[in-house]
Image (cartoon, rainbow, N blue to C red; front, side):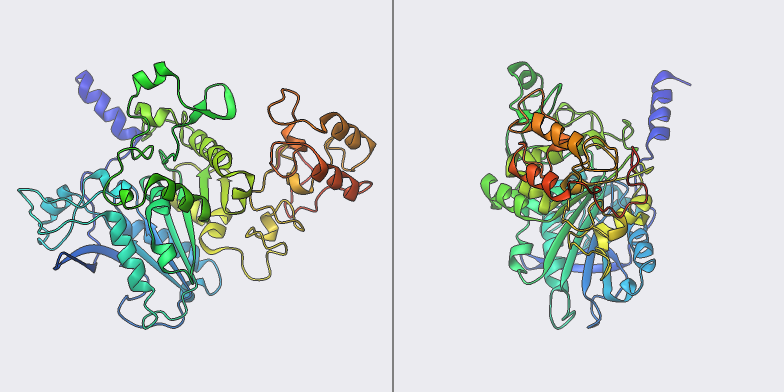
Length: 452
């Protein structure tokens, strides 16, 4: 085999690439653009033209680069089926963003919209010589139109919750859509959640990126780095040179929106390789691999918005799972992200099920557990990990009191609330639990390291 062909074969084995879709989804969602009715395929678990008062939650799931919307719908549907009552009260909707090769291969009619790979970042559909279309629309505007349709009270009068979920390229879609879409403001009476899973890159809202060798620190890249990667802060990686949809709001509005929205980053523990990874310099400035990029991005969001953003933004890592939307959605963490804890299973109301909550009696949606002992920082003053809060732990606090995270002596395991400083909140935690045990935690492995 020739070297070039061998290299292509290796790349194909490392990451399956689907040139055209195996299936064109059967549904047709009509969008009116400049007076023309055009369509996008979709799959759904309930008909979109039959009123159903049982529907309380809408999940719109975005496929990955393979554009297999049917598979992604089936995976979320399987998660719903495993939870009592969810299938009946949840509408799952999976749009399919076709590309031109799909149109040609399947001989599809000129009413169907299609995109380049830019559907991930909200670019407009295409109009080509081979496949002319009378009008174009952003892929994000299509989702806005779908949301308008399912919010019609004559159709689903009891919808109270909307979840936008996407894996891989779909995760890129959801990350950027969360900042650019006005739908959450338009439908203010409904709660929204955005589930971003295993994407290859994120949108940054300022020119700062990670500082190599300094975890949790962000700064504008050096002159040498910028010279090597002059477009590092252009959209889709930053907010420079925004496309038409995203530029409808200025960069400060995009920033404000994103910080105010509920976003879950659900990552596989094993997404540490380079298969299918965006290795352009713009992406490499965001981290070395998918999990690294997620951890850095979550730290960046906390840097930009402050620790309190963890009440809305949560990073969850699914143990033993790699780059698989099926495994992500089937996991307990994935189900929490999509459906939230079941009623009566979240005593501290932090949107983490009690059986998976490392602080049962204190709301800690970020689940930070610096020493990995199964007790979250917010309820763990047992700094010595001997099972009891006592003199030894008070002495640890005494040496840390007054320190900030800029100090080389700073111990993040003592920082109960993630504000980067050790002070009165930590003193009150030690005082309130002195003589007792840390926690309580809902994790079975609590008290062992590492847990889980």
